Length: 463
Image (tube, rainbow, N blue to C red; front, side, top):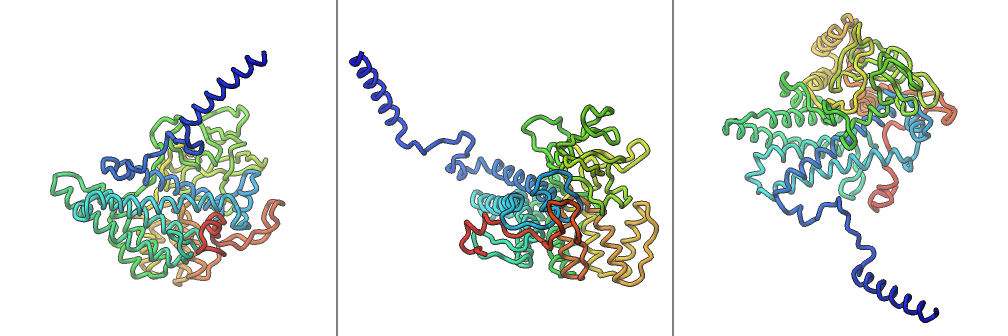
């Protein structure tokens, strides 16, 4: 028997040795979903790189929107998650997981836009790339990523450098937008000369014009903001980030995370263990974001909410945002749909438009007659009477009120509130007692701190 065991061990040992010889490096594991680096030098993969960068930006924008809405008090926490509570209360440190979850995607979207633009230029050469709308789009998305970073973060480094101020980040976006505009216009002209539509190129140009005007406005450079905003044509309805809009929801398709955060509403007429409002059921355990008390009291067709309250995970009862005017598939409230259209999994989000250009122009006018005329236009179009404002300060107050309604839940509010505080000394951040015993009072943060993942990895960003 001992002899048999010895032979068995010998056979197993030989097999193990053979296996070890076949796997010379136990730590060298092939990821079947990873792209071979060598393939990046193949120009036939250019469109894959472009689509990947677009997807990264789409995911980032909605991700920043959901957490930014909580931070800026557009939304309120309806869950028991302590991280959501801390963001809602604006009381957290650089170690908070959500801080990292926002920062990483913004930096990746910025990096992808820059890197893919450079690679396309390398594939084609500068002459051909000068009329390639894909290059313009990548630069525009990189510029817009910088704007989002500057609006939301107290400071941030680029490429492992020293943290830059928001003003420096806004300024860094300008050359990207300028290049995108130049290449986009040339691309449109080339398309027309070849008998093709220039619509795709024009959409990138207009996105860049709005992006540059938005950055200039945040810098307090009203003249530059007006120069770029005034070039946006009224035909520019919107540049959107898309998810699975219009496509039946199936596993694997990209969805707008706001839909999941508001309880994944589905058409229903019976509770069946969930909360029902306006003909839609809401999963109580999935309701993370509810409309804040500050916004639920505003009656405006641009920001509809459920006609009745919905039960949240934390057992509170809340009004929940339905699709605001910035979202694809928006339907204004009516007799048949008093709460408008509920959120859908693939709803797109408007990130730039002629409407925004007009808001930028109105603010750049600093409360003059042109600003008042625009305010009255917006008020009357949405069922409100003319403004009673007289002084420039009063007119700007009315403009701010219209702006928060028009851009509700679409990633503008944090940047707006920071600008109001620095440029006008107007503080619209909530303060005082926080309505949850987990955090006694609202904190004083008005921007997201640089997360510890950056400071730990980047010696130039050590706090």
